[in-house]
Each structure stands twice: as C-alpha cells, then as structure tokens.
Image (cartoon, rainbow, N blue to C red; front, side):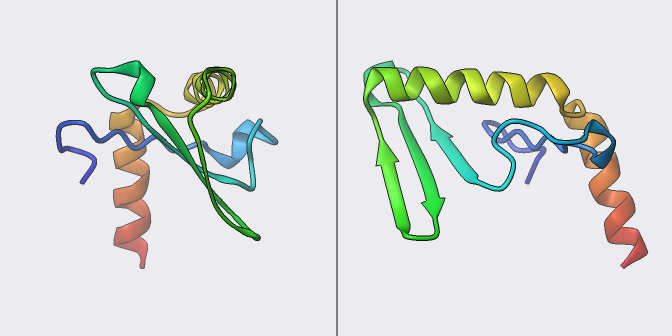
Length: 87
C-alpha cells in the first residue's frame, strides 16, 4: 500500500524515544481545497472530526514534527518488510 500514489507510510523507530502525539491515532485528510481538510481522531470516547483552521494548524504542526523524526518512506518500507519476514 505504501507504494501507491497518495499514501505515505513513515515508521518512527523506538530509538526516537518519546515523541509528540504518541498514543493517539490521527488521520489528516487534505485535498486541493484546504478549507475542506479534516482531522479524524480515534479516541476512547469515540471518533472526533476537526475542521476549524486553528485545529488544522495544530495538527499540521504535529504531523510535521512527526515527519521530521520518522524514517523516510523507503526506509520505513524496509523496516516493515523485515518485520513481516520475521513473522
């Protein structure tokens, strides 16, 4: 799936230690019209959708920081493939 257009998988290695946003599931859906961007949070009390500009800016920043500490997509695929081979 990570080789398909529009899909990026990035692994954050354990060696990165604690990182912002750990422990939460965040999906950021964006498109050609940024006013339609939406954040999907899967929380213990249910699903939450966020679309206010201030909220979106917060999650764009969070995802940018996560991307900075994550492995590049090719290295992430290599890690995932190595784990799958060991199963």
